[in-house]
Length: 330
Image 1: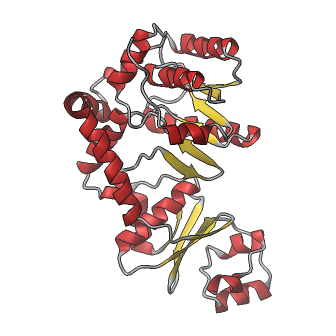
Image 2: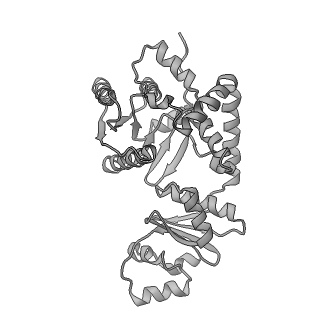
Image 3: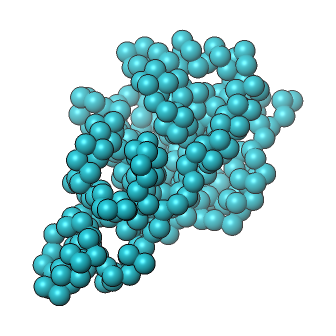
């Protein structure tokens, strides 16, 4: 019998001590992760989104319910219908909005997703062809902190082929989403024409390269920001590439995945509101990032902010949270 795909022991140990929520679609990847977690005695519950896009969508939801009942897991489901225009983007927004809602209401600490080595290489190649830098190309990490929770991707070093072998060897039921085979989507073109063939020939070397590159990324992007509640303060560098990488990291922790257009706006204006939610403002020696709000402030507070050169878009959040602006210059 084919041996189980090995999950990293450090990741398993981490998950043994956290309250975990598995994003479960019913497809092969998330189904394999469900049983690997179960066999490794990792505590977790499951969350499922039914987009009603295919005839088998309801069958996938029913399968999620069956697994939850059989293995004594809590199940959270959302049924929605989205417009076909830019479906993937809207589906991701709807999905993660629901995930975060469940996480916050039930105090989960981690969100587990079934991204695998092929997904990592696919993203890398797509970013490479857009003219991105190393930090952007390595968008996926096995453990990634977000606002109020942590995303964990335990399969990130494992190929889809190995997962498929595991499912077949143990005769595990799963569903195949035919949209993943459609070359209408650019993502699928990269997957089928480039990522999968490369992994078929060079799986071990590619996994090892990503491990080395993740270590290089840590050296390129040191943790030099300060955080107070949801306020981030970043030392301003002369190199805008370093600035935007730190800004990008802070925005991700606040639940925002900035687009290229939004990054360009930040660098062009040095004072803007991203997605109508998060203010990003340059000051003399620092960059301030905080939730954007509009509230009345007393004159004394505004005067202190003016003296401390706190950007105007940041001041309402400080006032709302009771953060002393004079302490930010120390």
